[in-house]
Length: 420
Image 1 (spheres, rainbow, N blue to C red):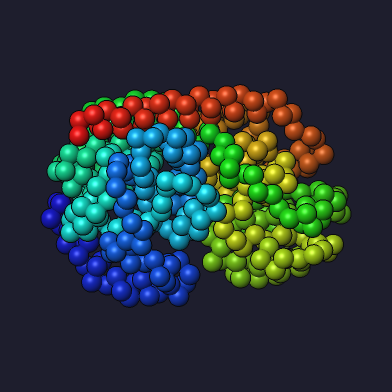
Image 2: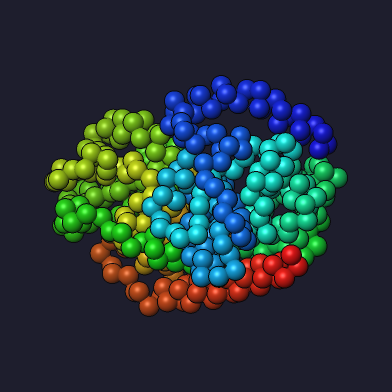
């Protein structure tokens, strides 16, 4: 099976120049840094001990940044390498100031690139985040005796079923994980069945409030415009959900003349398509990138930039999380929760069952099914100030998880240093 996997990767490599070209045209790839995916690094590996983190995209990156900030204090760590696979995550990384930490794109998962990558970076330990499972790099890490940790691990029911179909292959892949830290009970059970022998529960890193990420506020002019309006936000929306939210706006506008709806699509390359759909509903839409001075006649404020989501959460006490009505799995609700917003979500949130169970118990998240129930929920909440005391419990949980994870990683890293 591993041989077949390598054949598929080789076929991908043959067509990769064409794939990269089209991704650059669609602004999904960095036209200069794409070479990093072929193991041509743009940053230097400095002398000393290096720890490597890998997460797929924006969510994984943001979840580990508070931990990385803490690990930079460890004098035994000379350099921290973070790899991700998406352009959006690379753009967000630029907004942070680190002393020891650098970013590179994750290499294509071939045996050749895996050896080349590890021979250059030589990490003391490798930490993969959430559901990032890559057979080739896992195999080479094992051969080189580099401990592999799966942090904030997340295995969904569908992912588990796919791996179980290729049981022998999955066993050889997952046995390379020296220890896994699941973010929920479901993942813990699946990891046991997938041949992971050492599992330790600490908690979900997404409970941790990334303070540095929320320090920057919107410019004064925009904040002034928002202050005079009743504002709610729809975040990480997927196709079709923007129309639902726009129709909710039309319903609520009959009662609240000064209503402003902020929509932050998950993928901003869809901006023009979304803007046209909103205009077809006879609503006025303004793009964030246009840097408007006034929003007097604006219905929908469409955010078409990366890395500013939390700024808008600070301006809204109500946030609808997308990929939950028309999508599958949902998106992380803890970012707006950490900033004191009440979260509304659809029925399809299988990826965050445990999280929503707690948020529902604290009465800071509510389920909706479509235009009617979303309209009703916002109508109830929009004139009701949030009880900030409810959010203290989340802050305590996040702080505990961060401290325990930091201590765990520092301990593992220092133990490996002693061996060398």
